[in-house]
Amino acid sequence: MSSLAKQLKQLQIPGSLPSTATAKASKKASLLFESKEAADIDNETVFSIGLNGLEELKVIEPAFSTFDNSLFGETSKSLERALQSKDVNEKLDKHISKFLQYLSPYFLLKPAHKVLEWLIRRYQIHVHNVDSLVTCILPYHETNLFSRMLQLLTIKDPSSKWNWLRPVQKAGSPLSKTAFLQHCVSGPGFLSFICEMVKEGIALEGIPPSSLRVLFTFYTSTVVGVLDMLPKVTEKFLSQLLPYLLEGLKSDLPEMVASSYMITAQLCSRCNMEETLVKSLTDSICKVNCILIIKMMITVKNINQSIKTIFSHLFLSVSMYMYSV
Image (tube, rainbow, N blue to C red; front, side, top):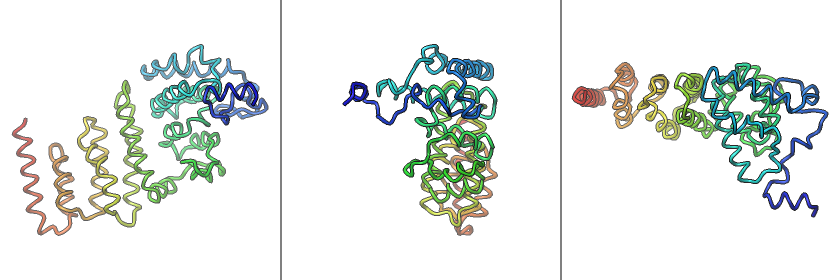
């Protein structure tokens, strides 16, 4: 075993982790430049581009200053992931994941492209942080910029979560809304992934709700689109969606509540709901909006038998609310 191999083993670094220092000089992955052109641009120049993008982003959203040292500090210019310990790389991954969550609402802006150029060059996020990167750009799947970024990703391995995007990557075209929704329908776990994106976005510290509008819009259009495309809304699907929906209806964020209202309306038009489900939804909604309850009454199963129960739930909930204010 060579001395270098022994050192890598001691550091517990996977042997497949490539070093940016030993990468082929003829081509380099890049969002802003063609691969051959990028190979002629040194790291110092790319760092300056990225730093400039970060400064522009901080004017829009001061929370980006959190990453001044962790990802854009002077020491990052000489950092080699392949020579870092497992713990250091895991910590770096957390910083990158958080940064990409912050960046997602601004992905279409030029400053975002600049910082991504540095993250690609220095940290090889297109290889080592594919999940976080796709999460960042997924709301823009119908754009050419999404297609451009997709070209850089390492998703050839059939075991990759994103291998299903391989045909789109080969075609060099955006991911159509229909194809995206079809994947959500065929893989229910993927819809849960979209719902979790929203939860994680809301949980981010230092980001104003207004910055999450893109995420809320993406979430709403996706779930409504899936409900429209499903041949039948099954109990399994409901059990998957309802926890997120009920949580959204109780959210302190008006944007999230509005999203949940629209999804609930679409859900009402697609399935016959049992009494217990109606009660849960009406309890969550009636404090601020009765329109959806009326729609529930129109679409609920066995309306003649259920309408009295619905009105009793509505009256009780409103009465409790009025008593509490």
